[in-house]
Amino acid sequence: MSEAENRVFADRLEEYNAWVLERQGLKTRILPEDVANLAVFLASDAARMISGQNIAIDGGW
Image (cartoon, rainbow, N blue to C red; front, side, top):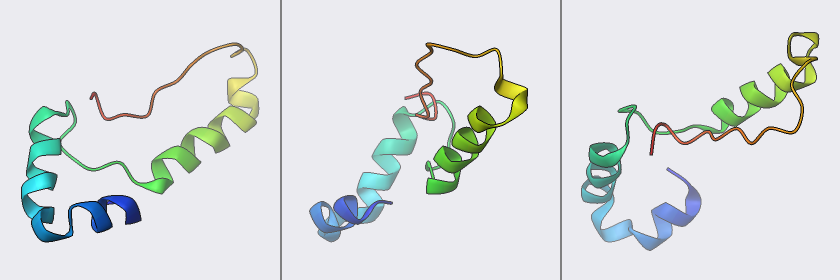
């Protein structure tokens, strides 16, 4: 969870986490590494033909 989530939902973190996962398509929390992996991919030659796209890293939210 993010620092903001930890502060806002401090008294009910487990309940909040269950609520998020219940509604999210992929049943795991998004990590900073997930965003970093996309950035590395987009910076690589493998993504050389990708342009003007919006890519959501949202776990199927």
